[in-house]
Amino acid sequence: MTIGLLAKAALFPCHVWLPPAHANAPAPVSALLSALVVKGSFLILVRLWTEAYANIVTAEAFSALGYLGAAAVLWGALQAIVQQRLKMLVAYSTVAQLGYLFMALPLTASHPGAWSGILMLLAAHALAKTALFLAAGNILKAAGHDVLSKLGPILPRLPITVFAIGLAGISIIGLPPSGGFLGKWLLLGVAIDSGFFWIALIFVAGSLLASVYVFKIIALAFSGEDLADGERFHSPPKLMEWTAFALALVAVGLGLASEAPLHLISLEGEG
Image (cartoon, rainbow, N blue to C red; front, side, top):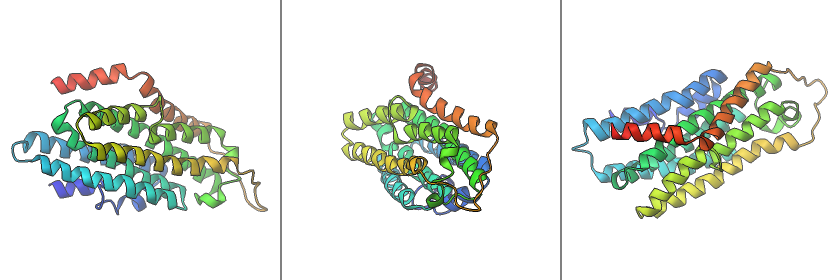
């Protein structure tokens, strides 16, 4: 059951199916797969390990998932950096971001407060990654492709979509005041308090690597390139652009309006 759920959650090294599947699916499908489906497998696994089989799952087992999560953070981010297609980049980013959730599991054994950070990070990633895939879909519709090296003339014509990518990237990287920042900040505090300094180090390294692939996209909007002869621009509907922007804005706003969600998380923990 655990191996099956790890495969569905795309935890390294069971992640090989996720990038091509998410990158080649229609953008709305990719968004739902990344935001909900893989996280559902993570939550089912957590409930099995902490409830159904809590009396037989050891701290060493949680540590093993933590190490795999750390590998996912680094491997997914490095692979995202070298990708040449936008949707493939965003898909590998999902591998990395899911790694944070698993990497934080060893913290829950020594500090129950880690669950607040895990669930906040989960919600922030769901919103930001949905926005990123929808924005990637808008770019694909406008350009007819998602090859990064050829998007220089296209992105300046899609300011709302580029702004959405920037806002979502703030949460993916973990910059304040986003929900991604709050989730990582909570987990960093727990990791340091609990003596898991290697987890804190991977959190920081993963955020730095995430900044590289996010800025790799944003930089294209300032390339100054013009459309080549015969190259066409197909403007996507404004509703599609504003939908991605709104979700990215909520991902950032989650950190500013965190009192209510954190209160709900604490009530669930008490229940």
